[in-house]
Amino acid sequence: MSAITFPEGFIWGTATAAYQIEGATRADGRGVSIWDTFSHTPGKVQDGHTGDVACDHYHRYAQDVALMADLGIRTYRFSVSWPRVQPDGHGAVNPAGLGFYDRLVDTLLDAGIDPMVTLYHWDLPQALEDQGGWPSRDTAYRFADYAQLVYERLGDRVTTWTTHNEPWCAAFLGYASGIHAPGRTEPGAAFAAVHHLLLGHGLAVQALREAGAQRLSIVLNPAAVAGTGPGSEAGVRLMDGLQNRIFLDPLLRGEYPEDVLEVIRRFSDLSYLQEGDLEIISRPLDLLGINYYSPSLVGPGTGPGSRSHPGTEGIELLPPQGPVTAMGWQIEPAALTALLKRIATDYPGVPLMITENGAAFNDVRTGDRVHDADRIAYLEGHIRAAHQAITEGVDLRGYLVWSLLDNFEWAEGYHKRFGLIRVEYDTQERILKDSALWYREVIKRNGLV
Image 1 (cartoon, rainbow, N blue to C red):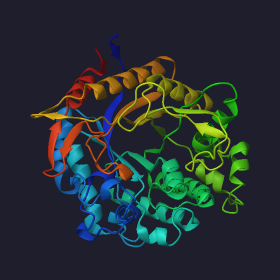
Image 2 (image 1 turned 90 degrees about the horizontal axis):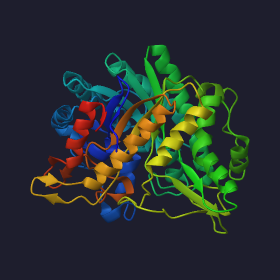
Image 3 (image 1 turned 180 degrees about the horizontal axis):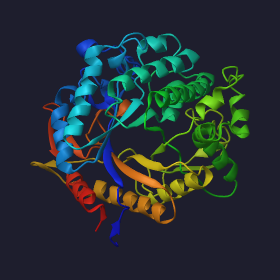
């Protein structure tokens, strides 16, 4: 393959999420999150795994930052645990909880690493879920309050702020299929959650912008939807609406697509959609984060559709074609190029960043090494796909690998490893995989040889 070089100033980094790595779920006044409750409910997470200890990053953050510095990481995207900052989701700050992020940010900056804060990566305080959760409008206002509290403490040092990570997952996996916390199976509630996640985003953007935030973003997981065979066009359009346009259109056009509203009306009367909401939701963004792992294949069918996509009766979600990761996800870098081009064309004017891309494989440790050639091949293919998008005119500003560390992989527990760094969960030993050493060279060269 030919050598490629990225534009000067291209951002290389990695990403994590609080519940997946921090552990210390009862330390220093942290409250209970929906993922604490969910993971401790029998049968919800494989083998009963929980995030109680995870990677113990709460106590080992200095070691992890030193490893990032050794790899030459330029940007570290991490999430703040809402119940660590506000144990019940409202009211005064828990000083010890917010103090952890204060120390983390300082340690990152001392190491020459730019901190990129995600305010919500799915760990809603359980107290707010007990009051209705994201289907309740009040949660959007509580989120904006929380965002302001975090910004007041860290805004003098953090320049890039992300409101939500993958609101599609929070809404549909949490409230429609129930395979993620809080485990509800209420399609109407899922659509209400979509709107209130977006409203909370808009309220937070408004508040942080007024407080002086420099760069504001949201991270989506848009689907690269492809049809297979005659008659698949309608299914592609429907899936694109329910995973992509349901978020992109309100955020970047100030409206919901009419075909998506037709689906929503089958489950909800839309009474939660109030005058002025879309104006708030569509406040200007400085950056749009894109998480990509695998394409979605659809075709005509007669089945009930997907529980995670209410309203998809009559279409079939097809199994992957070709090589897959340990998650069973199809490996298709070209779909990333197409997805980036599509978003840049349909929603021009907003710079993009790949905020998550990576793969789980069945890594095997040999002595003090982890030879993960399959992960290197996956990352190289997708980095080349990102570069191709840039050459075709996409304003792509950076690439963040998911993930820095092997970690708690939600309903999969600790069975799936995405990390550049292996974690031995019984001892908390960290081991740089071959992919980490390879990524260090990518960053150093600002490209691929």
